[in-house]
Structure formats: structure tokens, C-alpha cells
Image 1 (cartoon, rainbow, N blue to C red):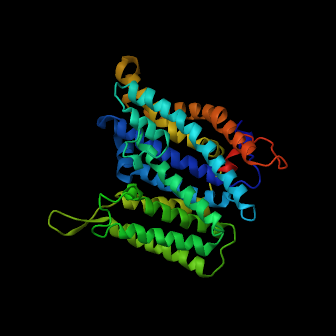
Image 2 (image 1 turned 90 degrees about the vertical axis):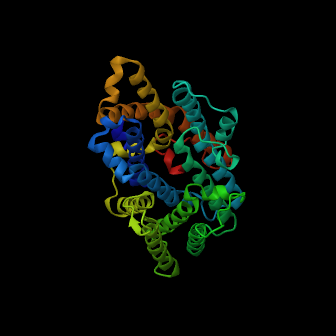
Image 3 (image 1 turned 30 degrees about the vertical axis):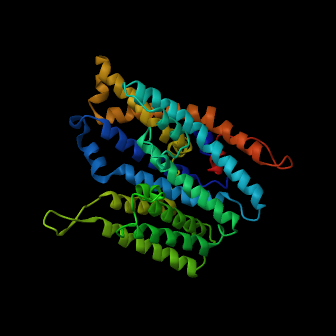
Length: 381
């Protein structure tokens, strides 16, 4: 199966799949570390906490989305039909697997551990955007999905206006979001009465700005970004973000002096951007197991946390399973293997059929309506 998986369609960016796997593994690493007893973390767990590897992985996911999603809206196609294809495809690509993860979370992360959850919170989470409703997330990792949804809406809006394929428009939107983010630190801008306060949730304008910068990088990667204004703006943006992220990594100490918070959250974002650039433009990993895991990365990302909760519950209630709490490497391996196996099943049973359904619903009868194979499906992502 691995050899077949390693021969994707010729137009596929194989290393992007491998990068998704790396991002997912970084997120897994931090989540397992955080839930392990302090005495069982060892140096490997302390390294994960010191580097905040989960933040690096999330930033890598955001940059990948910026690199892939705008390019999936095809210029030159009828806009109404293309937008219909895009929204149907996005909905069926994301929501069915997400709803399965909600059920898994309720059973394994909440019910199994004897915790109660409010019905309104469940209903709000079903939308994938509980934050605007003032409801908590069932799983902490769901916070990234709201940013993805906002990014899709912005991309669709630019496409409808005929601007998504224009480098200048991408650069302008990215710069505007950067200004919005920086303005959020002006006194009074983030007033609690502001109904759009949720847009600053987890520094969303920063992530969106970098995602549109990544869309410009895709044009550079594809040879569509000449040495003109757009390329200059892109280079300026990365310089601007380098300054902003370094500035935000300073804080006032007890004596009122600025002190360096080395590798704090803003620093990990910068590391994630640098890692993306290295992997995408230089190393371009194509190791078959990583490519395979990258194709499962959405289900893997959604399901690894409740599956980990189930394993740690077994370790807590069954003496024979106590070894799961004894060593971080052992726990990581167990969660990785279980998550990969369940994600492979979810990929085949849920993701691939839903993507094929989306293609059938959104394409005119005259177009090729052959179903996507498992190997080719993520061309749609």
C-alpha cells in the first residue's frame, strides 16, 4: 500500500502532504506531553514544552492552507459555478469528519472521564465556530478551525470580485490584516462591547495575514510572481512580521524593564513560518510514510486527542495498562499508532466518500464525474 501511495498524480505537490504530517506530529507531541505526569515527561517532553512545538505545528498548518486553498479556486471558470463547487467541496471535506470527532470527544474525552458538557456548547460546536456564540470548544484544538473558515470566506469573496488571482490584491489584503492585528494593541480597540471581538480570538488577523502571504508564496513557487511590486510587498511583509513577532516577544519584568521571553508564543509562530519556507522551498520531504500520514492528517488532527484520552483513562483505571503513564516515548508511540489506524479508517470511510459526493453535487453532468481515488483526494484540499 505504501508503494502505491507513493505514486500520486503528477500534478500533486507531494511534499505538502509530508509537511501536513510533520505539523500533525508536532501537535500530537505537545498534546501527549501536556497530559503526561510531570515525572514521566523526561527531556523529550520538556523540549516540547520549551519549544511549544504545538504552536509551530499549527502555524505550519495555517501556512499550508494559505499555499493550497486560494489556488484551488480556478481562475477562468464561471464564478458562480466555481464558488458552488468550492463551498460544497469545503463543507463535505470538513464537516462530516469534524462531526465524527465531536462524537468521539463526547464519548472519550468527556463521558469516559465523568465530565459534564452543556447542550448549548454541543450545538455551538457543531457549527465549527462556537466562539462567536460565546460557547467553549469541546476540544481545545478546534480553535484553529474558525480561522480556517474565515480564510475560506475571504478567499471566496476575493474570487467573486475577480481579485483572488491578482498578486496585488493578495498583498493588499495581507497587509490590511497585518495593520488590523497591530491596531488591536491600541488602547480601546479590543473593547469588550465590540461584537466583532471574536475576530481577535487567538490573534486571528495575524494568522490570516500570513496565510495570504503564503498564497503569494504559491504564486512565487509556480513562477507567477515576477520581480515587481507584489514580490517587493511580500518580502516587506515577512520583514514586517519578523519585527512584529520579535517585538511581541518582549515583556515588562517585575522591575519595569523589558525582558526577553525566549521562544514564547510569538516566537513559535515565527519558527513555524521559517519551517514552512525550509520544507516547502528547500527540503521538500517526500518520504512515503510521511506522505501517507499527511493524507490522513485532517482526521488525525481531529481524533488523536479523544483517542489519547481513552488510552490515558485505561492507564488510570487498569493496573495492567499503567505502563502508558510511565514513559513519554511509549505513550507517544501508542497514541500515534492508534490515531494513525483510526484515521486511516476514517479517511477511507468518511473523507473519501464525502469528497466524491461533493464532486458529484457540484459538477455539471457534462464534466468528468469519476470518483476520486484515495491517493488523489487531497488534490481537493
